[in-house]
Every structure is written in C-alpha cells, then in structure tokens.
Length: 83
Image (cartoon, rainbow, N blue to C red; front, side):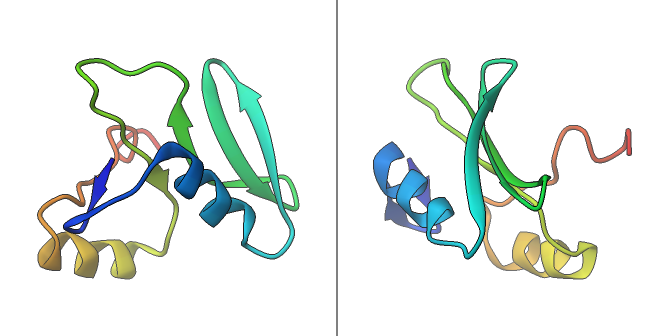
C-alpha cells in the first residue's frame, strides 16, 4: 500500500493501528476494523481488487479537508454523504 509517497505493508498498517492506546482489532463484514472504546477509527477490506488496498481513517472534518488539500492520495470516504 502506498500512503503519502511511502509504501506500507498490511502488517505495518496493522501494527500502526494497534499501537494506538486502547485499540482493539476485529473483523466485521469482510473488513478488518480497529476500535477504541467500541468506536471504529480505521478499517480496510480483507480482499481487494487489482492489488489496490485502501484504508479508511476517521478524523475531524477540518483535519480531513486539510489532508485532502495536501495529499492527492487522501480522498473523501464514499460513505461520507450518508452519515
């Protein structure tokens, strides 16, 4: 997986998510998810197409807007219009 010009393996992503204090790993509907106190902060699919993996990270709207402006690989979540 390529994030901000860096390449990250699935195991590195997993370790990074689990390094967050209080994080717990789970699987739900073919997605690996990471939660703190029962609230999801990151998830990614167990299977992906064309060797393209993505991760969805939850953050404040103003922070995500700034990240999208500065990094072309950061996009708005497909579900963001639903919630």
